[in-house]
Length: 411
Image (cartoon, rainbow, N blue to C red; front, top):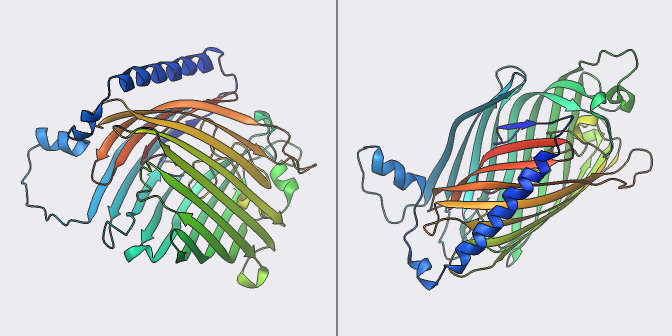
């Protein structure tokens, strides 16, 4: 669970749903085109505005003089909620963005703090740091969490049925840490350690025949542990990962999870993540963003460690589909998004996006089915210093719909 608020899946999606969202996307593109035609060089001189400016105007508080060289900025998403069929989520997200060197040669670092609960079956606390040391000499990132989840599973592959739904209750401790040393320019080589400990695992399957979870047979007992080491290869020339305007990000990670490090079974994984950002204007925010991922696992992979929808490190793969809806030993994913300003002062913005995911089929190990989705979203600038947005997105997929409320861009 990340700083998304809620996801729902429809077994019988209305035909009007996709048409409605397609209309919204076309309207957004049309409004963007009209707005772009009215832009000129003077737009770059318009004073930027964020939610902090609005709050400070209407909410009285004692103003303290802030040093000019201030290097830390906070953004937060207050408690929010949603409910469908009694499944409610309350989520808070706090972002700290800071500099550990000169802005001329050091990227912005960030840490996300994400406590969440649905007051019954899901609760936990997540910390996600991405730290750049002075002159970008080192990059250190990770994922730390203590959580309890009821995981909905439907078997393996991209062609599973909602009728095979099965809830897997579990507790999880995760410790992911990566240290990457600059080799030259924006290229880094490093080492990563991943620990996932699942315990108190049990399913709620009530049908007279074994579930696909039990049939899988690996990591389906009361507990499962993955402990692995491996090299990282990183290229990242985005000055601000909160809201990239241009640049390229590529991360390749290999993990070996042997028994002598504490893993329940021996298996390996490859995670290859690529993101490209293209600025289309010198005068206002107009960015094309592309995202492609290959996530492969090999050997005796525990069930809860298999690639799954929104099961990646960022937990954002597959907007438009229920979290954990699809699962398999290998995943291919691609997404594109257009980001644009609605107001000239940068306070309001919008996005339109489309994505597709595919999981290897268990019998043939081939990518036989594609799962497309598309959507649109609204952006509100929370902090113009760190360029952090509040993002509200709506997406439709194959027989499903979901929405997300997050801090920062989706990728």
